Image (cartoon, rainbow, N blue to C red; front, side):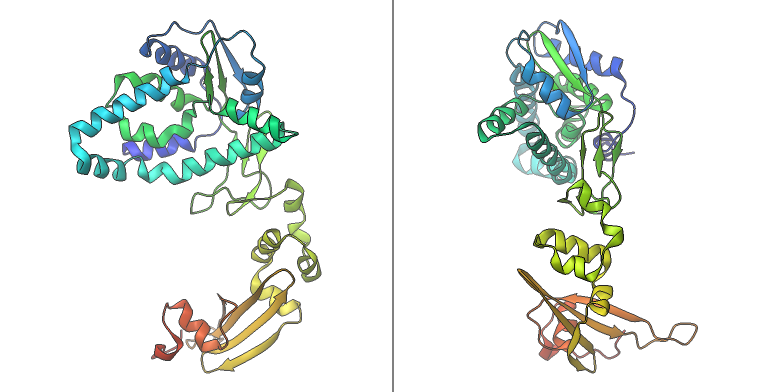
Length: 333
């Protein structure tokens, strides 16, 4: 397994945490920064619990995140950049950390948002919690940077060891707070949080995030997806949630069951459209495969197209990335 794939697996790791190994990594990170080891290490079930604990510490001293993470990282980046040169560094980053950056950054930001939503009752409190989150080292979710420097910097080995065995952590002068890894992580093919029947990200202490193809949704919203009706979809006031409902229910099924009427038909297919209050119309082109199935039937496909198209041919042409005037398939499939 390549270094990148190894760190991809670290970023997505769930289940039991090796506490002893993670604690050794914390102590190594402190020593590497020229600091005394923390007098105590406190474990938390999730980043939410970790933030709550870090926020309540009164005798742990100041945050030493800069010494433990920021400065060693900056020095390693400068060293590697100087050794490889600008072009070499860009190539190195593109083949290592860049391959993990978008998904890990998005996941970390979603966790931060979930923590603020759970802990903050007023704007001033939200700002205070965000400040606490700035003190966190992201552990396994620092995988992109760790992939770029894997095996290149001894000062980063403590950080890497924590990341391999635990989640987020907060380093302070006299204490460190470390979080367990999640117990469940569900993502779609694009790496976005995604699950239709439960939490997309869950921790053992109950902290959980719910999402459909990357979009945050309330937990109770998902429980209603299995009993959707066209009327329920039509009356949903939140346009983003209504789009989730339509994706789950199926645009073709919704059109069939909601009283939609064809607005245009030609040799390529049939254009259907239905208006939605407060949102763009749903437009679909119904296309019949010209090649019969083994049983002699002809399969029907539904193509989602922009609501601005006015003809079935224009919609089909759009799916091929061409204008209606130049779309002339030899055989429709």
